[in-house]
Image 1 (cartoon, rainbow, N blue to C red):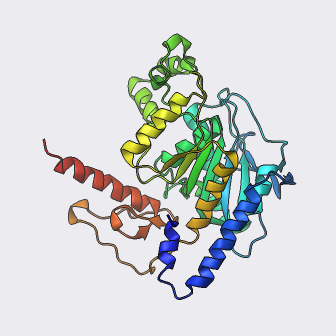
Image 2 (image 1 turned 180 degrees about the vertical axis):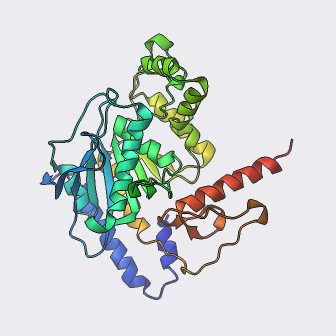
Image 3 (image 1 turned 90 degrees about the vertical axis):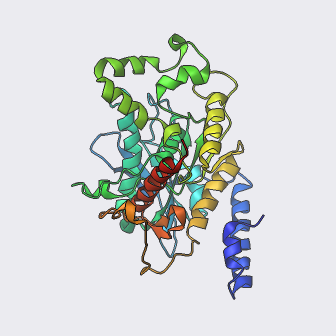
Length: 360
């Protein structure tokens, strides 16, 4: 089966030249990912502060490209209780992506001793928004941003991929006006949800033997019932997942009932099938990184419509949102192209129409 963008190129008069370029592109990927000969390279910018907390820092590696480069963001593991990258300013993973013309950022975030889980996840979002806000300064293509990580870092990537856009067009902080949505997401040893109330059922464990249940007890003791339920929804990647999410790729889990259990992967796969989300499970590390690279490259080959297009929506939907984020993507429902703010507005109305039309 040919990649989708090849089907688009069939109608182009320069098809031979374009196909030759694409063949060169994929051959180059195979050369980079077929072996682990990449050397660790020093970050171009080390310990960039993307927030006010000491742990809200990142390192950034930049390729030498004539046009703005796509970006992949890495989140480390550690169960949200450990791990740091502050002094790890050299990276082999960065070298691999740089060789493909993709910028690489390694992000540190607050831990549970310093912040609540939903705030830690928003550290990940803020890192994405910060880099988008400074895209011109660093020569980045803000329309092509991916993320991956290990364990907790994989969970952060999944949460960002499935969560509604956190951009606030009216925010005083210009960083928070940027989109938090991703082009592609992936990772190793992922957890399917951070609604921890579901973990005993998913892992088939009694509550007193389920990891992180002490955190649930803390939430219940310090939050009102409404706040607790709101927090659960915010942390539930399974709830947020839908067909509008970017392509995702994660590895299989372990056969036990721990935080890296295959049970998380199984329920994630089931949910993706229910919602039509694009999910692959791939254990080969090089193939996983290659998938992320290809998706970021393909996104740059999207043929965009004319900027003067006029979008017409059903009258009963009312007016589309006045303030929209500055990212650009294919809209659901064959409505053309627009911002993720507009995409989520369309998605919500399409879902509402389905509920109304559903026979009782």
